[in-house]
Image (cartoon, rainbow, N blue to C red; front, side, top):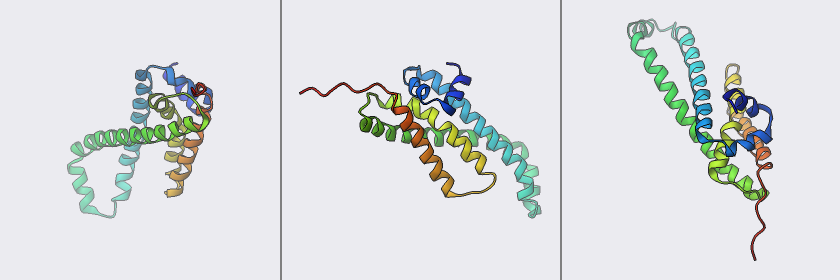
Length: 169
């Protein structure tokens, strides 16, 4: 699958989200890092456009920002990328751990590494939705509902994992 096909599969196809468990981890990592880079770039654009409007009341701060602008923007971009990457990887890892519970509950066969790949796709759409909703309102409920949405996407993908062999007596 190409990165574009992975992106489309993350939107609507639980069977393909489950099928990524057998893909090479390198392809999934490329997808995750590209997604994180796009999120960081969007946040950086929001930061650069919002810095003048949010600090327009503080004339001294605005003057200080103009003086260190050459240092502020590259540092902000690197910091946004690193912090977004760390946050996204922790989020994927936590949802993958919960996904293992889904596999046990559904009596399906799979490992943490398989569920991590599936979770990498499952968090994509809720993350985009949470980012888009953050422009209109900031609420803890958005995080709660997007987490539930991610869990639903993981559960729906876990149903397509192969069945576990019967227990030996």
